[in-house]
Image (cartoon, rainbow, N blue to C red; front, side, top):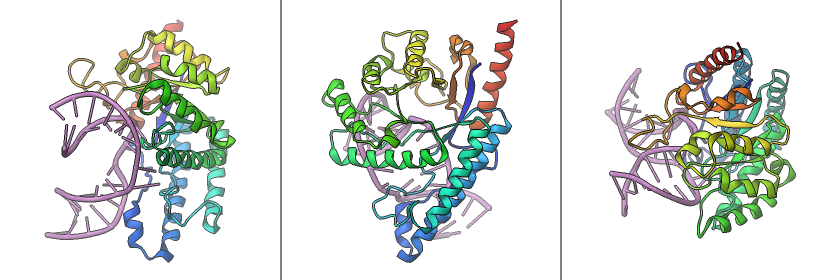
Length: 304
DNA sequence: GCATGTCAAGTTGTG
DNA sequence: CACAACTTGACATGC
């Protein structure tokens, strides 16, 4: 049966992740900056442990870790790292959170921000993207996160050229980051059909986002795309993404996400598979629990 | 308290 | 051409 996953944050459960801005940090005396960033990191890793515990307690089998877990970690003059004095303690907390995830069977993943474009035309963008992916690889290694999801990025001057640049960027990554990399179809540019050849060439699994596929279709049916993407996981439980459109499928832009998942948007073929379904919905854990109840009911009815 | 403006970073498409 | 959208508002500030 499919398992459900929660993305990044909670709506009602009292688990909060803190953030800061580079501008604010520069208003602090340089001596105070590492301590401030360390405090945020400690808070956030404790919150991550709470999030994993919450998932385990509610039968939620996956959690997507917010990329801002260690705020400003890749900023050029942050002055704080996991290798430093305070960082050692954070690394220990990360390992402990990872141990909890492992024993309670909560799969962990990362999905970097929109700024991460390893196939960009601009080399400084590629460099910054790779730094960000290395940061996630380092944290993923400590907590045992299985994957880091990236999109294809832009398409200038064409898709083939851009995907070739993406392949170059990916191949510059350390093994620690690269072995966790996963591709995902997006809602504007790259479809499952576009990404399958690159997935095969680089031996990267493909996450199938059915909402993006419906916004940005190719020649594949939902079931065929599910099947082809699942094969790229080579025996591991495939990950997929699910959301419903905030304003419905007709009329205005279908891309913004609704508060909850409309059961009509769940592909029926998913219910017969071992899948990890990341729920991208504004009502966060409430949407995950509602979908989980619906899947249980429907799967039982289906089997009977 | 509460409303508001701001925040490191990319790319695309809409109005 | 400004701005929203994307996996996600949180925070400091000023009243």
